[in-house]
Amino acid sequence: MGLFSKDIATLQDLYVHQLQDVYYAEQQITKALPKMIEKATDPELRQGFETHLHETEGQIRRLERVFELEGLKPKGVTCPAIDGIIKEANEVAGEVADKAVLDAALTASAQAVEHYEIARYGTLIAWAEQLGRTECAQILSETLAEEKATDDKLTKLANAKVNSRAELAQA
Image 1 (tube, one colour):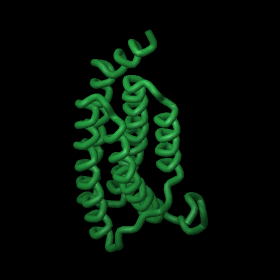
Image 2 (image 1 turned 45 degrees about the horizontal axis):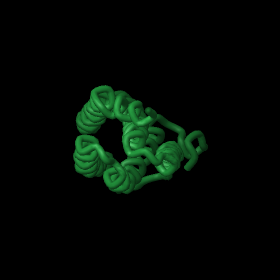
Image 3 (image 1 turned 60 degrees about the vertical axis):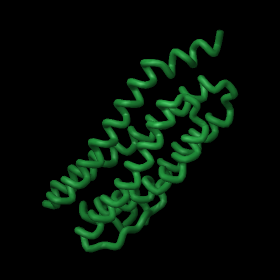
Image 4 (image 1 turned 90 degrees about the horizontal axis):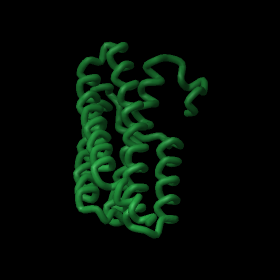
């Protein structure tokens, strides 16, 4: 099923496709986060990634609940966007030798993932509400709140120390 293929004829079809897209994305994120945890040198950044890994596992369970409410089996569809974001993060991290600069790169990559998720969940909530799926919208809203909180924590950490340490590494 392509995003704009004839398989998507209704808002319901589009909603289900995007649920499948984000389900796949969350699963890919659970595979990427352990690598990011391993590479991070800042203890607070590492802890943040560990916390988000556990949150992501809970987000997958929430998505499975939404699928259940929709009368569907949980299923993912390949999401080229998240695959690209993760590929780029791996490429950038592989090119950074200085650990302080690496932490800044990992933080930025994590924020790119969060921004993607925030966009997807915001859209899914709007569509769920439009389709009268109030309970689904509430479940998805819990995840959106976590994604926004994670992004906020990453911004604060970057501004408080990660970026300044990376800048000092150039000296």
